[in-house]
Length: 84
Image (tube, rainbow, N blue to C red; front, side, top):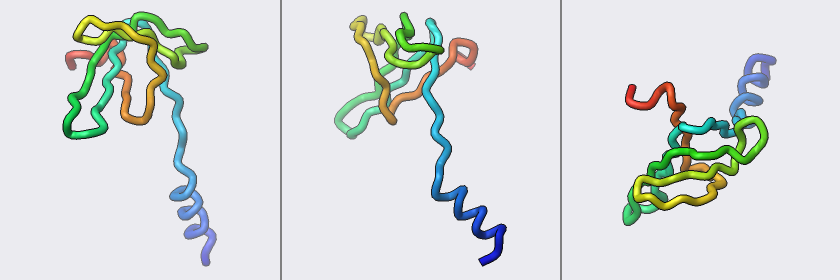
């Protein structure tokens, strides 16, 4: 096995892990995990973790607020990209 192939396999087996970061005013999108559920969207009111890390206090479009520890089905849309 050549060095280049060994390096490429290394990249395939060790995915990059990126921490979720947010700021007040960003949107949190929670994608449904089943077909019976709908996606949820909310505005991040507070970032309670260090350096923009979770948990986030979120007000959802239905008016409910809750503390969220985002999972893999969530994404943050930064305020500067909203409506773009």
